[in-house]
Length: 103
Image (tube, rainbow, N blue to C red; front, side, top):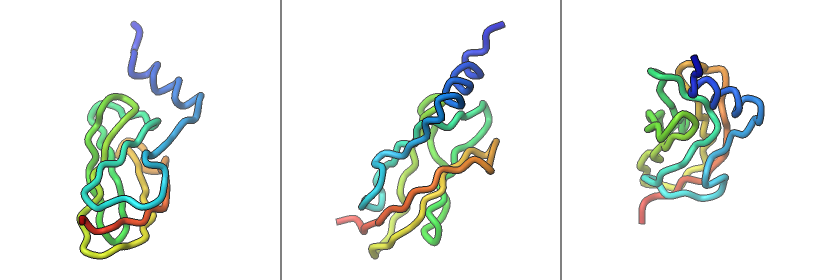
């Protein structure tokens, strides 16, 4: 039997494409970040760890894309974002962002 989810996961594993959009720079607290390329198995959750701002659970868009909302802050902070799936916490994407307060 053909398993589409497994096939999509294998293709992304072979291509090795992991990304966060926007890719870097300044983002406003409350903004959404699009994470592409991780393979999300059924039942697994996407987590976005914003360091001292906290960890949020992402919303899966499909098998390879998810959205995380940047936590609210009242000051501008530079943070390293770590994105991972709960079914493989050893595979993480890391990116530095300057998180700005909501205007």
